[in-house]
Amino acid sequence: MGFGMEILFVLFIALLVLGPQRLHTMLGHVAQAKAELENAARGLKSQLSAELDAVHGAGTTGCSHVLVGDCDLCSNFKSMPESRGPAESPLMEN
Image 1: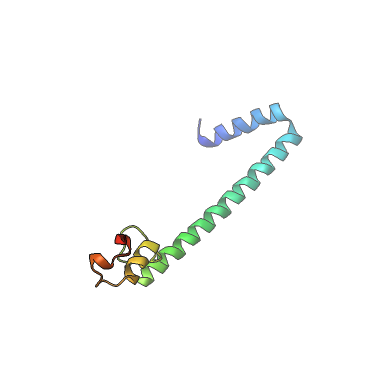
Image 2: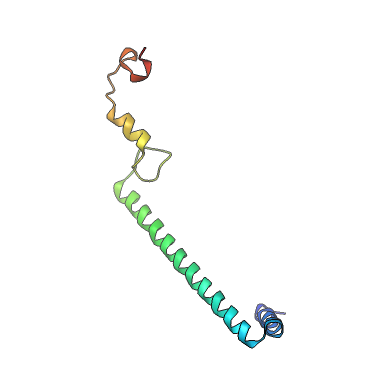
């Protein structure tokens, strides 16, 4: 049996078990859920595309652990002066 025949067989069994009114209602719910799933997938795809375009437009971030250059850890290290010695480090205070 092909894929189309299997679907027809399942629908026929569902028609016998549920009846025409409940089968119609059930198919309506399935169609609504399918539409919502497609809408969510479309939104996720557009969001991912926008993020990738933003990264591609901004160039490389220099961070191996983030896609977009908004890493708090890296921005903290970039804002710290590089000339600090071990005695001036805020982590080494007594």
